[in-house]
Image 1 (cartoon, rainbow, N blue to C red):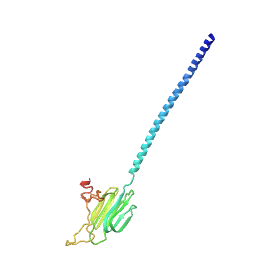
Image 2 (spheres, rainbow, N blue to C red):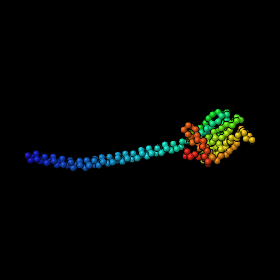
Image 3 (tube, one colour):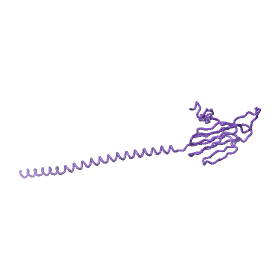
Length: 214
């Protein structure tokens, strides 16, 4: 019995010794696991921040690219039996002869030079001429005149100059001529696009939009 008790005591001591030996190892392993988890958590947070910053930067670059999209300028003329002279997208003067009806020309690129448009009738009788400069499909400059029209518009400042032929009655004592008079109006047409696809023809003193389209 004493031998058995002695062996049992030695076994308990061995177990206690092993437990005491393994305890620091287990504690170190647990600390290592906690440290690993902490490092992984930190890495995930850093990765999330980097991805967020990357997405934000990409979004900002997309907005910047959208802001750099050039405006589309265009000419629009309505007249019968008239010649049209204009500055094209390459800043060259081009001519359309014997136009009938509506004529348009778009400049789908960024331009820094003055847009110029000249229209003249090729018939002796009086006719109306509508000549406009549009920006993104909306008339920003132009007017209605008779037999001739000359427009110049600066795409940077938004300022322009124009002259239009005026109607002269053939019943007046002084008569008239086919070229019409020359005017340099301080006012311009409203130009706001309406539901029918045309443009508001109200004259506005000093330019801009009329009361209905402000």
